Image (cartoon, rainbow, N blue to C red; front, top):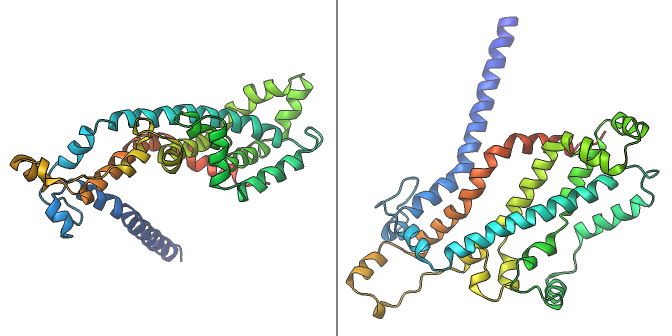
Length: 294
């Protein structure tokens, strides 16, 4: 019986691993296909001949992107946005999540603030009121137009709040008995013990700022102030055969809007793919602990 159970367990584990591997390949398939298209020639990409390996390997699409005069500046704007926005999101998320994690005795009228947050998470004023507000505050063409409208990510607040609430109550009781105040409890006890949840909300914030493009379209008035995602979304191949010589026409045959768009996607994915492996273990741990309430 023991051998039969062991054999059955091994078969089940093997089947489960095969299913997980298949799902992983299905998830990575579109990404790999996009990379292959970005390294392929125009004719092969337009003809649908590119599957998972480049056809007519070329780097012309990436050269075309790097030759754009505002590409590096837009990359800098996105990095600046992630840095400034990440700090603002982190500070405000922590300062809001900690008091909301306290009981009604410690924080009177806590429920009023919670209902206010939940309402704003489900409903918003809309794009037009947001546009008018940003315009009235004179934030057009500034980094603050990209950062302040989303300064308090409510989902991150709730995630971190639940993580704080799941921490042992004995920690708070011991701190209060020793005369520790709220700031001491937050900075010396709760934050050092909350690295998984903090890494999770930081990752959400970084990914959100990096991938956002629509706010750059409506709040920025010049290409010089576009973040990277807005810039590559607006980037198109402008073809005017009267301005090209024979060499440039030959180069144009290797680059098309399809291969160029694939290269844009690959370039925009690289920074997140570099950062994510370092935060993955905290991300999974933080999601599991921060989303379950006793």
